[in-house]
Structure formats: structure tokens, C-alpha cells
Image (cartoon, rainbow, N blue to C red; front, side, top):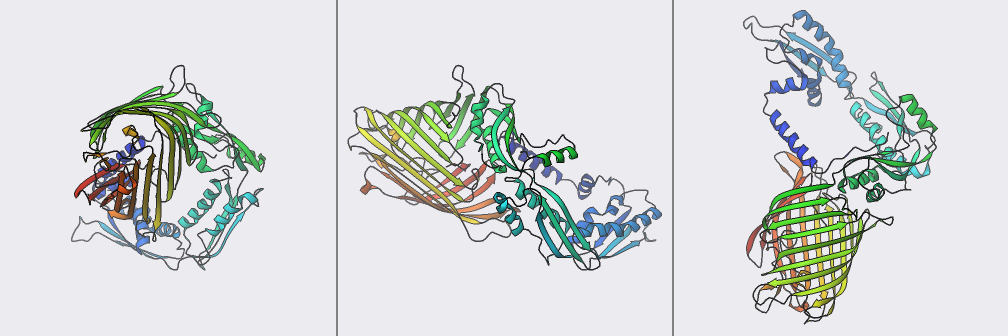
Length: 637
């Protein structure tokens, strides 16, 4: 039956990995005897009845030393010579069976037994197994076929071609059981991941001639009925609107079945906060509880094309959730936070997410209420925030209100909202308090290969707004921002890490169009510098200059970054670590002809964690002439 695994909340993943790591590290403290007993169930407390030595090519020797049946009897204390002789007689067949999985069917096997020497009665007997594997079996004929009603389905032609073109077992190649099993399952997975979730292997045969060391292999796949997504139906919902939450999944109703689309829909439901676990399956697929014969009959009775509803079996999350956090940042120092989630505000049925953050530089309190998506997938939201934040060499106390609508699709997000800002800046000769009302439209496109730890792709976003200041005077103004990021793989894949180097190119820009004398809220002005912008400089320490020479927010912004990331090996780990060298640059000013670029260069380490990349960078600001450490967790765009 086509199905996806139930997901738990993402926070469980690092906990499970940490637990596994602790268990593995504990196992590494065991002696070799203890580890052998753990894996094979052998009691090693007594003396060995015999020693075992295997003489064979390396790959074969490792296989035999691990799986020989004879190995299980080495520590049997009362093993008699007659019984050992019987076991040795069965070793020849056991060896042939094992190395046959590697494609060797004509080996020469010799088993030698050396008794305990008379001069040392305590020495164990010695068994030597010598193996000459003989010639390897090669593939003489390899055939892939498709059978059944959809064997010639035009819409599935690309999948059939992919299976045929990427079939790994070609004529003249070495035949092994592992490669044969992997090839068959790989072709089946290619069929099942799109359009044909009930695809199966109709028949397969590997005909090996041990006399000629030739193999003739063939496999026939039956794609089964072609599936199209029907509506998503949520089972187990009591507290929350199942129709509204189903829209969050964004399952592509009316389109052909795609396994990845189901996984994405499942992940969106889990990440929505309304459910603790979600299990998706096709409603019209044969059930695993039926007998094999009944399952096959039902499958044959289906039409060549099936439109099936998708069932989401859910366990709902609690109505409210509190999250307490302690953290630290190289930009803003230590912090304490309290988050509260109310999934169904009484009378409104919207979701409220509130936050209190106690921070030495950036304390804030905020809340946002968000409705469920409508039929057009747009959802209403309203939110507010009160915050104290650094603004260059000044400090700004601000309040903000937002009201609008948003829409999230597979790769694109849109926002339309009205925003009120009030800001009071503190510091020597600080500008006056100001407030404004601004209408905004934002668009974000993310085209990365992975949204958590991407290795290629690009993202682009822009936001434009028009409005008016309210105090201390009324002046119309406009505001626009844009940002871009691309990850470009370069070079060949590293043979050891199986990964490639890449370039990360990042750029952003912003501008405010207003009269020179207009007083704007400082929260709308631009500043840069810090972990996510220009490394080598303090958080929001790159800005325009006030009349007294202090750094303050400006009306124009431009930043850019070039970073080379390459895989490395640390303590044998060849997949999770990367090294990076980079150069960042940024400038902020009130006039385009009076903007001075600040440049930072540095190097860093990346670790691919389950929740995204953890990054540690050491950067030097060329103009500030200071070395800074920058730490970041996760990928965001």
C-alpha cells in the first residue's frame, strides 16, 4: 500500500540522533569479545574451543569472517573433536553460499584443522579456511520489461526510459546478488515515486551457469493503475477546522500522484502546529490487512487510471503551548525568551503566537494572529510588536502594527499588508520621534534543492511600499527592498565525500524615496553589519552618519557577499563538515554619492546538523581593523 511514514515534531530528530550517538559511543568502550557477543549472541566468558583464520581476497575474507556459521561455535566449552569435524564438513557449502552472493560460483575451498600441540595443552585448536574464488560470474544477458495494462502508458514513458537508461547491470559486468537486488528495487522505486504507487515486480530471474560463469538476468515490472490525487480528508480532527487545515497541506488535487508531494503535504501539516503526528495514505489503495490474494484481486480490478482521495490520520496538538528558551548571540549577547501559542483563539478561531524576549540589546514583546487559509489559499493576519533595538550608535524604542493577507505556495510566498510604525530614537542629537503608515506588497521565491540545508538553487525576494509619515509632519514616501541568493555547484564530486564545492553569491539593496527634510521612523531606515550581513563588523554598525559623526540609519542600502564552500573530513566524518572562505561588503548612506563600502574577509566551518547548517565564522573588518567571531544556526531566506 502506498503510504508515507508518520512524522513527529522536528525537535525530536536531534534528540534521537544524540541518543544514538551516546549508545554508539558506549558500544565503542566494549572489548572486541564483548562486541562480538553483542552482535552474534555468543558467550565469550570461557576459553576459545578453536581459533579461526580465513585466507581469501580482502572483500571475501571480511564477508566470511563476519558470517561463517563456524564462527558461532568458537567459544563452546564442551565442543568435541567429532562435532567439530562435522561442522568443518558443512563449512564448504556455507562458504560457497556466502561468496555466491559476490558472484563467485566456482570456488576451491580447503578447510584445515590443527589439533592442540602436545607441548601446550591449553592452546586451542586451529581452523584455517582457504578460499580460491575462481573466475567471477559476468552478465551475458540483461533485460528489463514492462507488463500489464499500463506497460505502454504514454504519460509514464519518461519513467520507463529512466529505468532502462540507468539500469546498472549491463552485459559484461560482474554479477553479484547485492547489485541484482539493488537494481530491481531501484527500478521499482522509480515507478512508485510518481504516477504508479502500486507498481510491483511481476517476475524476475537470475539464471546463473556455474560451469561457464555466465548469468542471464531479466525483470518485468507491472506499473499498475495510474493514480491522480483526489481531495485531502483529515481523520481524527476534533478541535480544529479540518477543511481549513487541509488547505495548509497544499496537496495538488487533480494532478498525478507524486510521492514527494505527499511527503511535502505531510510535513506542512506537522509544521503547522495543529498536529503532533500525521500519517498520509491513498484512500483507494488495497489495505495491508487484506490477504495477498485479495490484495492482488483488488489491484487487478482497478481501472488503468484512479482518482483517489488522500487520507490524513492525525493526532491533534494541544490547544496551548508554552516554550521557554535561553540563548546567546555574538551580535546581541545572552537572552531569555517565552513563547506562547494559542491554536484557537475563542470567538475568532485564529491562531495566536506571542513572544516575550528579554535581551540586553534587543528586548521585545510581540503577538500575531493568523487565520486558516481560504479557498484561494490566502489567509488574514494581524500583529503588533513593541521593541527596543540598537540603531547604529543610537537606541530606538518602537511600536509596530500590521494587518493584511498572505499566501504560501510550493515555492512562492506573497504578502499584502498595511503597517503602522512609531519610533523614538535615543542618543546625542537624536532625530525627533516619528510615525508613519505604509502599504506594502512582498514576493519571495525559493528555488533551492533543499529548504533546510540547500546545496544548489537560488532565491529572490522584493518588497515595495508607499505611504505617508504621520508625525512630526505629513510627507508621502516610498520604500523598496530586494535580496538575492544563489548556490552554484562547481568542480567534480569529491570521491571520498561524494559532495561538490560551491559558490554562494548573495546581494541585497534598499531605498527610501522621500523629501530630504522628511522625518521617518528609524525602524524603516537601513542599517547593516553582523552575522547575516557583513561579517567582520558589529550588529547594525554600518550606517549613515549623523551631523555629530555617529552611525545612524540611512536611506540607501547595498550589500554583497562571495563565499566558497568545500567539503572536508574531520575525524573520519566525510559528509557533514565544510570549510568556507568569504568576502562580504556593504554600505549605507543618505546620499548615493556619499556611500562608503565596508569590507570583511574571513574563513569558517559548516556542520550539517539535522535542523540545518551550524556556522562558525572568523571575520576581519578591513576598515574597522578588528577580528570578530560570528555564529549562526540554520538556513533562512
